[in-house]
Amino acid sequence: MSRRRTLGTKKKVALLVSAVAVAGGGAFVMASTSNAAQSPQTAAESTVCQGLATALGNNQRFIEGQRSAPDAQSAARIANREAVIAQIKVQQEASGCVVGESAQGSQAATGQPSQAASASAPASAPASQAPPAGNAASGQQVCNGSTVTLSGEAGAPAASSNQFPAGTKLKVTNLDNNKSTTVEVTSVSGSCALLNNAAFEQVREPGKFLIRRALIEKVG
Image (cartoon, rainbow, N blue to C red; front, side):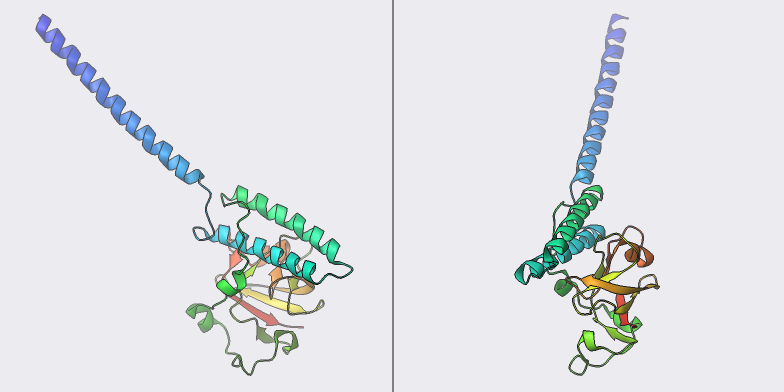
């Protein structure tokens, strides 16, 4: 009887050790997964982070332009864009992105149109024959291949541009969901068409801060 009780006790202890080992292993896996999920994502790893990095880069490039060629309004514009950059960094943190990551060359780096975008967009004149974007006729497609992101600015739907003067009307279509918005250019920026928050909300896909396949038309 004593021997049977000893064997029974050893068996129970072995089962408990096995259970603890499994639980410990599971806890380790869960902890590792949790830590991985908490690691900030880069622009290369997340479309959301890429859009925010692009927006940050556009604003930084605009500030650099204002500092290199200042005018009477540059100080106010720079202060406004610095506040916008601070808000974008808040969005980066909330979205689990690397805070402060910037895509300074975003327009050049992501400006090549995809095959799908070329197929969906109407044919346009060859680059050698096409007039400068600012001189384009009303209804003409402009800034072929440009990506579109948000400036981070509040207010009624509007856009800023480095190619069109204030008062120009642009129609921006997101070819991934066929949503469009027509906005007036109200200020200068570092890209062809930079939408403010309200305008971007009208054409964005949920959770995205970058429109890769955009059709931009000058309509007025």
